[in-house]
Length: 550
Image (cartoon, rainbow, N blue to C red; front, side):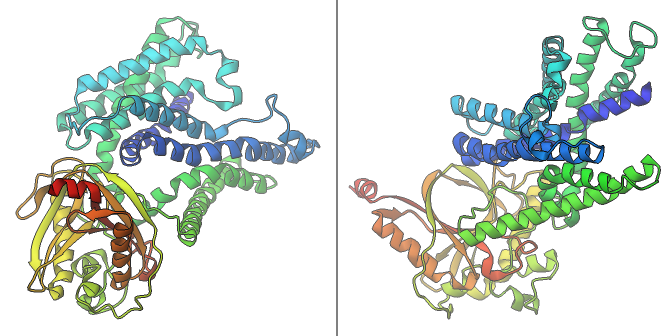
């Protein structure tokens, strides 16, 4: 009886961490894109796979399994059967996440998030959220008949906890609850979640009628179960996030690749696992042995397919010229807490390292980081300057903080200084459990003596603490023109000319120096010719500039 209870708990809470992570990411994604673009992206990324699964994949899987059991109905009959011959299966998670995301986007359209309001994570907030989940459980469980709860495998009984964890992730992302939570609070969360989990596993044994593990509606066990459900899912998730942060799970390159492939793996794993199960159907092994083989082969294959899908999508975007890097993605760690693995080598990095190889370690690469536009700034481009058409978009850049270092340098000093700067700023942020909100940037201002005043660092969501010469810089909001450049850092002069001509033809006046945001990762994009950089120029309309002068 206890074993069956544990199995039920795994089924109920196994996806809770995914909803939590989705909520954490949703807060940043919506903040960067705005509610409309965020909702459209969710419909594309979540809605299309769910529809494809329901219309095609699920009936094909059912036909595949049934045909092996002697059912001679043709595939067309399964594809056109809408009376119960199909279901969402694992896609219930995707559909639930889509619903939560659209509700969140609608809420933020009606109630835009205000200025950054970091707050401390407290037990009262967690208990309030747990009570909300319990209340939803009590309101919905008695009103969802089993036939409705299981219709199309929507898994309605699990949506309350999933919604609560998603809300927890959103609030934590918007208010930085997981920035530096109290050690005592985390220990209490771990202990209480263990007690609640044990209670949930053994609660069926306390049923009213001996030998019956079904908890009758309206009984006191239902109230206890709802309360334990809320406590378990909220407190356990907080404890889990802290464990992952403290052990720096994201440091492993293998785990980083797996994380990027996880969504694709989740989408394809039903087909892979069912296919392997059918392939082993004639084997005379014990069912447990078949299960081990299916999992041992199917899980890595699913992640491999997910990774290949990511590469294919990136190739298609790059080939079509429509790729827009995902702002705000936290790169992989270089080894210290909060260190970021920054985008690829700039020109001169190979010389600084004593080798032109792109396979150098992150630490060596960081120490050899070159100024991406250092060569053309010095007039040493040496490339064909024929004008090329570059994609340029206009955006509203929200006011934000940045953690930066500034120095006045000769061109030859740029490579070493930039590498040291990105490493030092990343270490400073990591020490205070702060993280970059976007990719690394550098801003160059040429001085009359030929040297450059260079400011480099990372944008952050809240005011950075700073250490030594790492300071907090306030970047005011402005309208910006963003040129999306792909290619060698030493060949950027035509791109800057194109941006200057765009300003002239659009009656715009540059405000301050342009800056570069580096979007590529040397591990995923080792070819310098395909690395991507956003060249960003703040500007105002010419009429506004003239009015200001008057």
